[in-house]
Structure formats: C-alpha cells, structure tokens
Length: 397
Image 1 (spheres, one colour):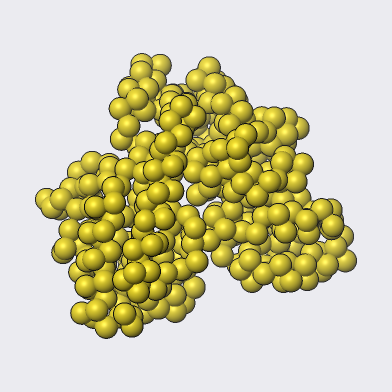
Image 2: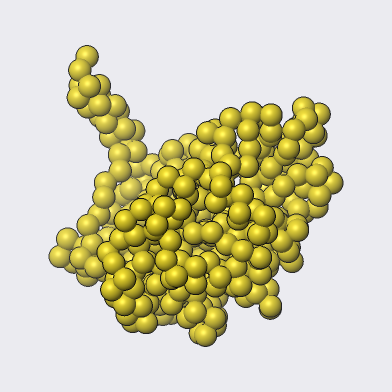
C-alpha cells in the first residue's frame, strides 16, 4: 500500500468515528466576536481569558517591538537574545514570585524541554492521567520510568510515589494546575505535602492559571500561589503567554540554578530560533496590563460566577470547575459535533472536544469565558444552549 493510500485509510477511519478535526478560518482574532466564513459569531472557545489579545496597548507594543526586527535570526544562545527578552524574563520572575524565568517558543517546547533536561533513565516521573499532551510527551521522551495516577487521586499518587521511591533515582511529580479540558484544579497543597514526604520535585503546568489566579502578594502567579505554595514547595512552574497574556510563547520559572541549568541542557531552548522581538514586547505589555488593571481578573471572575449561577437556574449539567473553562459533558462524539454545529447556526462558536484529546466516552463542549464577555452575551449563549439541548434531548433538563 502506498503512503497516500495508508493515510487516506486512516483519515477515513477517523471520519467514520466522528473524530475528524477541521480548521476554522477566522478573519481576525476574536475579541469576543469573530467573523467566520462571512458570519459574525460570539466566540466561547478562546483562551484569551483577559481579552489582552486585542488590547490596543499590547498591539502597539508588538508593533514597536517589530521595529527591532522581524525575527531574532538565531537561537537565544547564538545571537538571538535581546534586551526585550531579558525584560520579559525579569517581569515574569517578579510576577510569579520566583528568582528567575526563561522564555520558550511555546508551552509544548517548555514542558518537553524541561522534563527531558531534568530527568533520565535512572529517574522517575509521576503524572496525573489527565495531564496536557506536552507533559505526557515530555515524560515519554525523557526516558525516565513513567508512572501515572488517576485524576486528582491523592491515594493513587501516594501509591505511585512509594513505587518510585522503592526503585531509586530522582522523582518528579508533574501536574496541570488547571486542567485544560475539565477546568478543575489540582489539589496543590496536598500534592506538595506528598512530594515533600517522599523527597519528590513538583512541576506544575500553569498554562490556564497564570494571569488569572494567585495570592494577595502575587495575584497573577497561578494556581500554585493561590494554594499557598512557594518556590521551595513548587520548584518548577511553566506558564504560557498565549492564553491570559493574549500573545504567544511560554516560560519556566524557579530558582536561579534551575534556569541556569535549563539554559545549558534544555534542547528545545538551545536548538531553536529565539522568540520574535515583537512577541516579547507584546508579552511585556500584557504582563504590565495584568498588574495595572486588576479589574480584568475581577471581570473574569464575575463572568464565571454569572455563567454558573444562570446555568444552574436552567438546569444545565455543570462540571465542578471554578475556572474560565466550563465543560459540558455529552459523552457521544456525534452529539458533541451536532450541538456545536447547531450553536454555530445560532451565532455562537463553541468547540466540540473529542478523543483522543479527552478520554473515550467523554466528548464535550468546551465553553471558555473571558473578561471581554458581558453578561448579556453569556445569557444569550446559555439560552441558546438550553434550547438546543432540549430540542436534541441531549441531556435531561
């Protein structure tokens, strides 16, 4: 069989199982309205939690950053590291309450590069079963002994820590702070306690926590800080700049020794062209806006509370999510696609998430909220959603 025949067969199988993915082309970045295929839609599928992707100050900063050059022309270690990158790293370390930070081109590269730099065949990595794909792939590529525990199951984690300790070698526990498809939080304080008991290192993916939650002192640092953990308790945190910061790229933050080590050993940092200066400048502006305009976070919190309150009044089945990610589990892939398509016809863009992104039998609508939404828009979505679900008898209302 030729390559194309093999690929066609595999694609046909994915279509048959209602798992085929298609790319939607938008005329511009949604904020929160978007024009898709000539139609104006209200978008509830973006990770732009604070509305900074279309903020005029962020856009102006990127335009000014582009004056430094379209690209960095080489890796950070060759000659691609500029003052604006250094400024961004200082700002990220400060806002997360860590000693230092290092920027990467994406969250995927940050997670894979960090895990492969920290772990080897003699070591152990323990992962939550619902971890992001980048943590899963980093665990595989590191060559370390890989163990998993059921989602947010502390007894399961303790069991795997005991297994890893009996084997010997370093132990790293990797979890998402906020889970990207379920929207729930990891029990960070309890996980940190177990890590301390077994002498394990804790790495937390703060992709969906950075910028939208934290402590009184560090209000945008993420779920670790919100749970009261400091650098010694959560020594490795990764945050993305393409979600709450509305831009692109990612960072790892921790001790100065950690960052120095990653500069020397993280292959996804060493062997790739540096972040474009326009992106770095936009990220600097976004982080500055987070700090100057805390009302953005308060507006997001208000929208989450409003959504959940009104959804309960409509008897919509809510997941236990306190975050901007509000999944509606439908189970069946075909149902999820159909409901998403019907919502689009009514003027709403809501993504249907199916395996392998989520476990089999847990297809869902992934509704995401932003500070740029207003209560009227949220009410309109909920009413349309209730109407579509009732018409399709998808859930009992």
